[in-house]
Length: 97
Length: 479
Image (tube, rainbow over all chains, first blue to last red; front, side, top):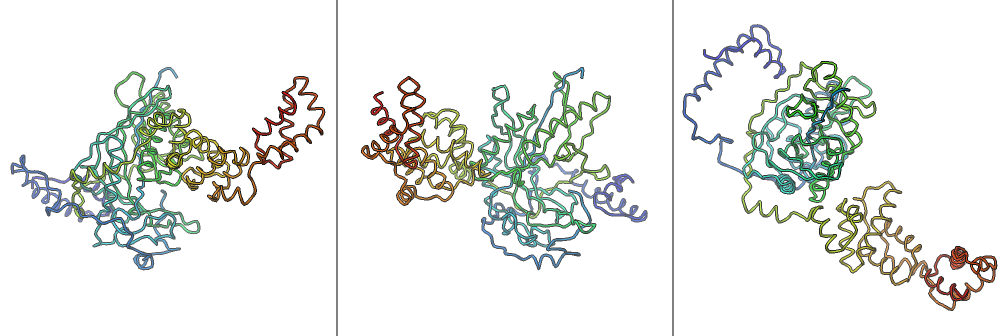
């Protein structure tokens, strides 16, 4: 494996993803990420100097909506997804704005 | 302080666009609905939901870009900015990083010393707003309302071209007027439809290197911005003078306590891992579409100011006040179009209208009377059907209830008495009853004239025509 993921990197990625990994999981994740990066590095073997960076898989553009209100009050339905609800709002851990 | 320091400021200004619906779904953007009543699976980040771009957002963003001398990128697209926060239901914000819709613009501002300078605009991009967090006073929790989630924003990123709070405020005023004239937003700082984050660093005067900057958020008024800039400048200079190093960080301003504090702890890494948004296709602005947007641009304030001078020959002072609000400028032009004298229309707007707005604590945007009624009032006063004081009284009625002044004057019998015979009778009585004043006038104290005019007006219940009163009075007194 050409790409070696350091302990610091896996720690950092864990913080970004809000994941707590056990030591065994960390080792596994390091190995998986390394081989993913190796796979991606294959692209580097090709000459892509004349290739436009791809922004989208399909050659489609300009898909729009008109500025017209089509949704009504669906709060009961939306709030049914909330693990906890209060006064029509989603309850989350105390957060300072 | 031994050394002299220069403040270097750049702004990130967020503006909520005046669309009826959100940027990626058909939910209403109306302000003040009950929590979560303007939400759907898209703006609450439900798995499997797909965003579809609101065309009007592109048009407003491009219009602001054109008005601020930007290059409009004919090919642009959206990117995902990844971060966790409870007001962000997708765990990413759809924004633009790599190909924003507008770049490389600038606006001209007046500096405190009366000169002019250009503040560069690095870019303008489109993005979605987050939800609103409210603290639950009764529990150890916060409540989230997603009504604002997905409301369209443009973020206008300036170059670090400003050097003082005055320049910052001049720049914000300029942006606000441009955007209000375009109708792209109401730009209210206190309601959050315009928000400014201040990037500030200090450096020794004469240095060409930039110092380390901080970003200050939560600035809800021009006064708060000015205070926060003064405070942050002092804070950074203190650090440098005492041999320390300014830390690059985001700070939150507390305007009540007049100080700022760091917003995020060091454990929260700021790494947004942007990547192209796969759920949205690119936006291509054709020449045809671009021309259409451009042709819809209204006359902006700077052009209007020049034209008012040339076409109406108004004093600069009047022009400044009238054009400072699009609503007032519109009323001015429509009233003049109805045949009224421009200077007279201007006087009613900048004196009486501004006075009533202040008195009633209203914003100029809320002026709702029709130009037809103002034009009629001006005509009534010009034809001396009513006198100046009555006109002011009637104007207040127009301001409050948009009444038809012709009918109102008739119904309430407010017409001036121009009838020479009737006036002469009254004035003769007043002269007879005030021999002291007549004596004063005869001995050269012409001030006493005013008293007699006042007495006549009182007798006529304010409805006499002052010019006629003066004329008859002088005639009877032989002066």
